[in-house]
View (cartoon, rainbow, N blue to C red):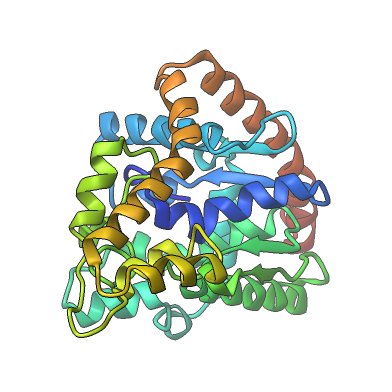
Length: 307
């Protein structure tokens, strides 16, 4: 995840919850990366980068990831990521990279596109393939990232010999795209988010601002968010008993959101950006990640003939 802002419930249900669930399952060796080099395409201020990186680290601790059980690290602490990205770029064509969603979106908006935005699929492929990742938790709209990593692994294996594992995306379809307060995908860029550690007052303000369609008895945008918290059977009772009463239904969502957020908010507030716990987590994570990638890069260098 890129450290580009304050986490919201879309981040949680679209990705972070999956991370916690994978850890809880106890069946996986999990690596979670703060993608600060990817964030350089958006954040080009040292103070802001530092603050947002620590904010994300704080978030990962607050949602329940245990650094004793998983590896949490910064991308910039593991030099192998950028080294392998360059190697991948030498076997990748420009037309292939032009298919990436981020490039096509920027081009359609007539934006000036930097090389980092154009090449980022190769850095992301390195992020994944360095760890022989079998499964990568992503939202439905990020599935292309895994396809790029698979294609790159297949091409490298074909050119230089069998070196990389082919990863699979891990997607929970029912929460693949989390709706925002305006019905679009929840995104900081749309200004339609509900902060993950919001106070009761912030939750209240966000929910009361949810766009509703007065033509039906059930406000669909309210229901779509509520469905993340309760089963459809539970919601049927609530929404049938308050059919057409949008204020009542929004108030029910406020209470359920606050009940859900409160424990994480308490943990989050117990930490600070300068917490020693954050320092220890990132230091140990960097050490483990570097050890993991060293063996892979030894094999890569041997395969390409620079060892």
